[in-house]
Length: 122
Image: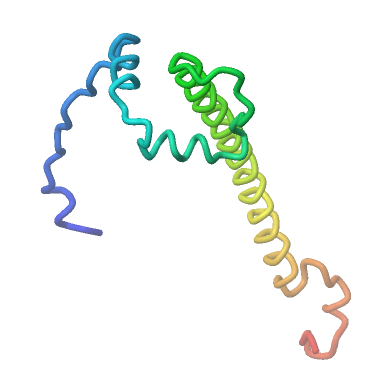
């Protein structure tokens, strides 16, 4: 029992800021330098489309946004898959614990043990 934990005050966090508007997002993208690290990572991504037919800024921005959305979708799918796998591992661990406990109990899986001399398992 931790006595000090009862005396701790809860920290009140500030409220979340409002999400940016479409205009703010577009303004931010337009202000970003071409060598911005985010765009560098996106362009070097294996999912990037290097055979662009147009080099206009609009097409470039569209492709960058599209790549971001694709990566975000893949990330969400990976998250879901990992959550499912975590649950499967948790259930398997619980089953393993039950099986080990069952094996370690002296007479649970060994009904013949009562017939051994002095009831000892050898």
